[in-house]
Image (cartoon, rainbow, N blue to C red; front, side, top):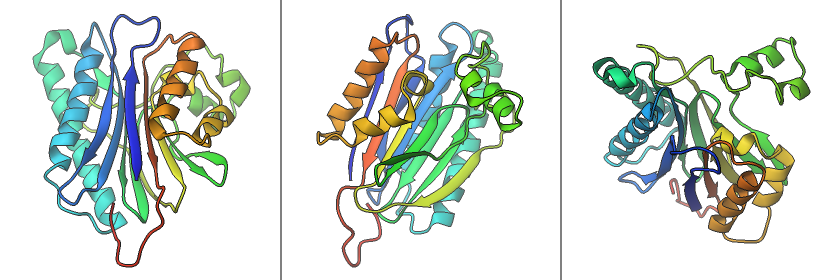
Length: 253
């Protein structure tokens, strides 16, 4: 696998409330994370940082995960633990009251990818020249689209586009979406904050993923385009490419 993560402050914000990274467990399996923090002066930084560092610290001591069921269980337990950490931290620090973060986290093995998410940071899979959104935004606007109250076109310019109906750390308990998908040789996974998805269409993102360049350059080009189009938000991207064919006996990355 080839993978790269990068976060960028953008062109307008005074600080970066995004966090994330690429982390490996004891079996050298990959966990990709993107978190987009929110809530008060720099409190978003705290929430996204807690989420990322907590998942990293738990993952690096995790032995090889061999089944999708085990991967999903790990994600559910880890994300709930992070939710409690953020909630308790906010309750003990007045300047952080109400803080929270989106989270999208993917465990990548040679056979499957297990994804957990809360909020509007997204996971995409690029398969056979088609970009498919794996996650569904936990946002007010997406709920309006889902229930037929507004059109997808209206959603792009809705004044409450950034309002979330679910976030990590804002409540004592949290529900998340968790799913597992299979992937094969030359499939590509992309995780991002809305600083990217609000600036590029799915077709545009897909076109960058098909370019014959290194994964680092793909990430950097996507961030450059988002910044050229205003860069009003922080931008975070992780791309993981399954670029080798599976050999007999291989069960993990």
